[in-house]
Amino acid sequence: MRAAAVVEKAGVRSVALTATGFDLQAKTIARAEGLRSCSLAVYPGVIMTDGPDVFRGKIHDTILPAVLTGLTGEGGEEPAAPAPVDIDPADLSFAPTDVVCRGDLDEIQDFFEDRLWSDGLPIVPPSLDKVREFVDASGRNGDDVLGVLLPAHREATVWSIAANAVIAGCRAEYMPLLIAVVECLVDPDFRTCDAGSTPGWEPLVTVSGPVVERLKFNYGAGAARIGRRANSTVGRFTRLYMRNVAGLMIPPGATDQAAFGYNFHVALAENEAVLREIGWPTLREDEGFSASVSTVSVQSVVTISAAMYSAGSTAPQHLNTIAPMFCNTIGPGSCYGQYYHGELYTLLAMCPGVAAAIAGDGWSKDDVRAYLGEKMRINAAIVNDRAAGSSGAHGFRVEHTAMGRRVLEAQGIDPDSVRSEDIDMPALVDIDRMAITVAGNPSRNQSRAFVGNHVQGIRTTRAIKDA
Amino acid sequence: MSAHSDFEVVWPSSRRIGTDVAAVRPIGGLNGKRIALLWTNKFKGAEMFDILMTEAKRRYPAVEFVGYDVFGDIHGPDEVRVIKELGDKLREHRIDGAIVGVGA
Image (cartoon, rainbow over all chains, first blue to last red; front, top):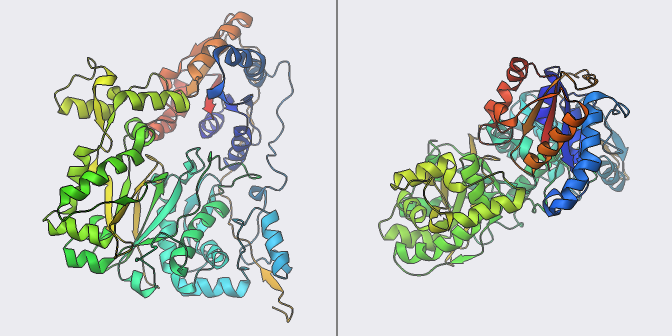
């Protein structure tokens, strides 16, 4: 719909093709883009599950008349201003300090739920005094604007960060960290505009540096589980902020079209003591920051590996076990996204014992990346089948993408003269985009891989500026 | 907050930025008009466009279509550049209307 909005802003009449369920998303985005009306041709049902005859019939019977009417204005009525939901937060606007509701706890919960301002969990009421306390703790002005978040086109203000931090159950002392999280979200390259896409990716916050101990993050057993306030509420805040300010809402909202989605991720904190002990750099140092600062990184996660248990005292013993499971986690889906869009960000989190064994064998993080990059391969035909099956990607052949050609030509293979069935493509091409950290139960030998959604929600890191 | 635990709360969102865009009027009959096809390269858009072009030409023989290859993939690896250049390309190709898809 954003492309149609660009067309309309150029003064050209447009008709957008979409499908059942996505029409409400299109209308909501149109409104956020400032369009007073939009003309849609809505395919009834699921495009990718209709056979050829049914498909052609629906194009003739439904899409064609809607397109012709939308373009010409002949044979139909001018589309009315979109009204996607009965209560649309996009239509509401208040001054930051306006009291929008007075009531007891139940009344506040109901009020927020009715206006789609809740993630469904009980909220901490964002009272004026509490929000002011959080703003004060940030060392910033409440009306400071960090950027604008799409798809809703709303300002990311310090005040709104404070309000959502209160709602999510954060402590006021988290504010500098939360501001850094939102600085990641507002980076245009992070693309919150695409966070409502059907793969249903979730933002994962990773925390590195002295702030981990100071704010009492858990980085040990159950590091990715709720149960510690810092981890849980920072994760909850991030999803809540993407809902309330970026405007990504599941039904009865319309902008989040995740096929399934996932629970919000608790923030994952790094076990720095172990990293120092084994001589590996921290996440923030890998991202080019000084060891003396603390950072947050936010990245999309669309898939998490199974528990990858590995054993042995040498690096290959561990990595030969990890490689196929990590590769399966990337799978043909994320592999297709990587080759199509040219980027893929992953995170490999190892329990301390695994990292210590690998480092003890003399391997660096770069050695691990290079080894896994070489080991993880997916047959090109499987990737191509996935592309055709998921979205009917037109004429997609992984070996003919810019990235695929680069990979094959580096191996002396002519991309135009190979059969897909005969070649295995690297599952992870730019291995520098694989972050590696240490967290989790220090008494066990497990790793987890987190896989992003190609160019959507790329890993973005910001320093935490103390108040 | 009163003794019976009443709260006075603020909203969790913020001001929307942007200006409203006036609706572009329909362009009337398509004879003599140039229609752009803009595509995401997904969801059977090529088949859709084939049918739409055939049927539109049957009703409006003098309509012209400017194909999606001219504009580039609007949701692909070069999306940012493609969208940035879109307004100029529409003007360059003297486009009267556009069919944009497929959002699904």
